[in-house]
Length: 249
Image (cartoon, rainbow, N blue to C red):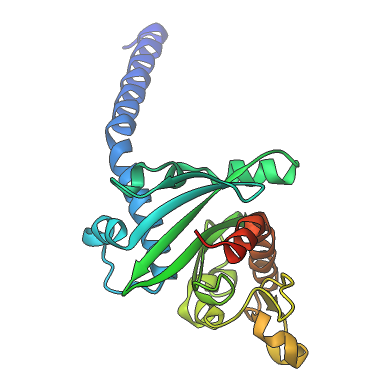
């Protein structure tokens, strides 16, 4: 019969062995996890720019083919870094933590944000990464603007834990396709963002409908979160957008 001391030592040894195995597995798997996260991020950027034919196995290749420049801008719209040569995942822009930088923005501190410039068939598209807070966790995505830096070419959204069939619908084409052709500035040049409207854009004044999309039925909180995310994040890019419009590089 085993003594209590023997049982305790045996259990302690097994716990140590299990912890060592799990720790080693985590270390060994991290490069693969990081690569998968990078591929997912690249895919979202390309999808917002309406780049077709993107599959897991060719995402990195297409990302480096179509992303001709990565830019990091500060809160005043100054270009901190322009990265054109080499693997784009090695650029500063790709490594920026949006959560950290947007928290700095919220506190009124200096911040930096990434921009990706995609070029296909001689046409440039500007992609602005997004991040916000949903109902059950973070939501994020990308907004691609045409060369006029006003008209939306496309968007992608994702989430950590929104409700399936409700808030989680922000990832579906039925929701995201509404954004194409909408504008973030009015005719006078005032920033209007894109409002995710409960009850639908039909309830908005006719001249405002170009700045709105239909909210998700039953997903009001997540819909509002997407609208707030777009307004808050794009606000941080406005100094750059306004500079670029006045004096294109």
